[in-house]
Length: 272
Image (cartoon, rainbow, N blue to C red; front, top):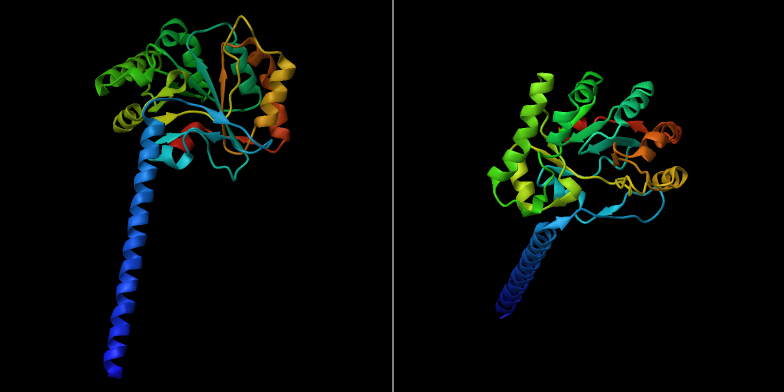
């Protein structure tokens, strides 16, 4: 009788263990499904955005670093390192890029210039200079469209290939496959297609309202805002069309170096 009772107790224990494992499995599957649903909702169609908290701390993006990594996409580097990746977007030349390049050369700072096809066609000498001075020229698409509305791989490829071909025509070099969606507008489809085409998609972790040439930021206020938000691993977006950026760049570089930051090459981050 004692053996029979012991056997029943053992069986009961096993069934409890099995039931607990099944419950854990169900909860895990539910968590995975919820994560995938949340990710799909996040990436369905979106404007890239950031939320800043404590001064000097990295911001929160509307997608995490880990979520973006699944698509070979980036918005920030290693937050344990005092390193900055300086990037400039340009749809056209506004007369300030030569001065910006002078400042970068003076302080031995590498940068990435995300250029559209129009810039390539109208400012080939500046494109050559960027390449000759060791900067990365990256893809900002041919026509600067809302990428979230492009629904075919062929449309995305056409936007990227036109810039690649113009760059090779100007420099004789193959363009690195690094791309930034205009205005940060994107979709999950874009991210998947860009990855399939061998591209890294790059957003940013620090930017400010510098693009309106009719309402340029006050230089002192711009410096204060950028300095209060600079952080480890920052991918900084500035527009080379901005007069304010031309005027404050040297001071930013000097002050960020004084804070202990170094300037990294974006291609090193996205090819790790």
